[in-house]
Image (tube, rainbow, N blue to C red; front, side):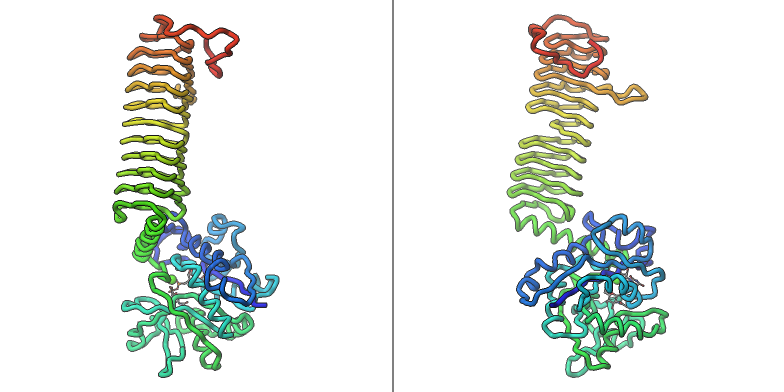
Length: 475
Ligand code: UD1
Ligand code: CA
């Protein structure tokens, strides 16, 4: 039976990033670099190349080699991976050797080891699977992924003989001028025969740079006349992130890819160049995204919505047929058909609101209007309520945050101050400019500072209809 294990190298500090954050934790489209690589690795079994390969294969959880700030990376990915520690970063060959004790514990023991780097986040499951399938098909000792580029920059160069057989990978630091002009580069994805790999790594000498390069194994295998196979991919997919310029380049490529996936799936994106959508976002069909919009985190947007322009939505669930203009939403849940904005800010909680309105930790019922310049904090508002312009819940007494309750059908006049804790009963009404310090009975009309009952707008409910100001402390 063909069995394989994956080793992901992520121990390097990422010196060229000039950051206190480990390189593989830098976010790309809202997800750490290593998260993208793990997604691809975990999806190999479901990829077309492997699915069509008839020989049975088994997989294990990826073995991630950590070093610099290992505890931090481990805390982020937890049980998703197995971990090996490379205490001192002495090169990529040394890093693979650090994984040996963990790999040798695996049951069944893998015949093949797929190695990839934690800093190549755009790698796809198909390409990883292609390398694996080629390796198995050729019964090779090493199979690795290459790419052709006019600007080979700091990638290792693939040296071939006159017959086209691979002889070595030469790192740019040690390459001759002629070798530097080679346009075929090493993408950093390899399959190795495990037994050969351990033996070769044991005998791998330290190179003049003081490191053990995984890439030197190619020259060793070539000198032993071993079967070395290659698979060619695109450089776009195997871009390695060594510095923040490459991080931005990868971000641009990935964002374009994400936008295209949404567009092919039925989402209209008016201006892809000013639209930013994170990797974990889901959007329903026939939704239109207008320019200047950023949708981040685990956000889910329904169908037939109109989002933007100038809108940010983070970690939110938006129902079908919502319209959100020039607004900021965080951890917000919107039911179907809700209209937000322009210029609204929704903080965690369920809301429905209009211009220059802010809602925090509140629930607002269906058909309630809250059109302009108002603030609802820590409030529960029923259905069919009108919140007049300038209404403010005075929810903070300097020490505690206090709740306001507004019953169904209440009419809150413009510029009402609702001094919490306070409850306004069903169908009650407050006059413009009232300062409501005491609970308002259902159906009452209150006015003034402090607000007093002027008259009853509607008959009081009978006692057996139950309390309508539940949860309030004053009557
Ligand atoms: C490496 C390859 C190069 C290839 C390029 C593709 C080597 C020697 N060179 O160069 O041929 O073209 O990737 O992107 O392999 N790491 C460890 N421990 C270490 C050193 C590195 O775990 O001691 C990890 C890093 O965290 C990183 C990965 O290995 O995720 C690659 O290391 P890096 O230093 O970025 O190699 P490159 O110079 O990019
Ligand atoms: Ca790199």
